[in-house]
Amino acid sequence: MTQIRIILLTVLMSLACLAPQAVNAAESADTTTAVLDSTSKNELLDEAALEMSDTTAMDELAEGGAYTQLKTKFTEGGAGFMSLVALALILGLACCIERIVYLSMSEIDAKKFMKDLEKKLNDEGIESAKTLCRNTKGPVASICYQGLLRIKDSTEAIERSISSYASVQIGNMEKGCSWITLFIAMAPSLGFLGTVIGMVMAFDKIESVGDISPTIVASGMKVALITTIFGIITALILQLFYNYILSKIDHLTAQMEESAITLMDILKSRNSNG
Image 1: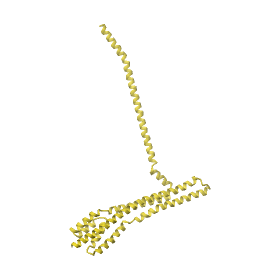
Image 2: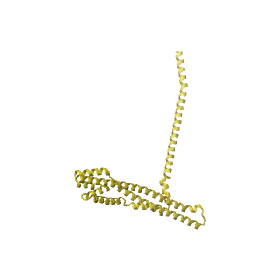
Image 3: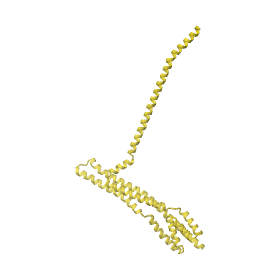
Image 4: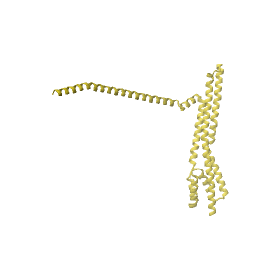
């Protein structure tokens, strides 16, 4: 019994000694967890602050972007001549868009159309071929219809008719292009006019102040250069659209010439077989 009591006392004393250590360990663990949580929170706050700074930097970059700078320079160029340059750009683009839409709607698959026309002409007759031409958009179908209207005439008469009507169709395709060339010429001219006026303003300030310091000359020269820049940019933009329009006109003209030759071959073959 004495030995059992000694063992029990030893166990109790050991537990009593281990209890404070466990409490200290638990407190240390809680402290470590708290430190880690605090560190994580600080890291998250730093990341959030970094993201906010990045967002702010991006906003500042967007605010100082090309559009804002362009608008600022446009305002600094003066409302008078800059408005005229902008008007030339808007009207020129309107004419370009109208021509591009018209020419795009006039384009067809000319080779497929001529095959269908030949089939209609051989299988169903002239009236069916005329109906196909009337129901098809574009100058190719129009010149074919004119050729079919004079199918009973001589070959020379049909060729003259097709050639004459092709000239009419080319005139329709080029309608409005003269206005585009006008705005292309006007835009840099307005810019150069603004340049001359800006230089005159600069010399007027020099005369009135009696000094040729850079601050006095800078405002007039700035207006002069800005109007010139915007005039040249407007002319370049309109010139790109104008060249694209000319390429589409050339493509349609080539289609008409090829289709006219094909139509004459079809008619000659039909007359020889008939």
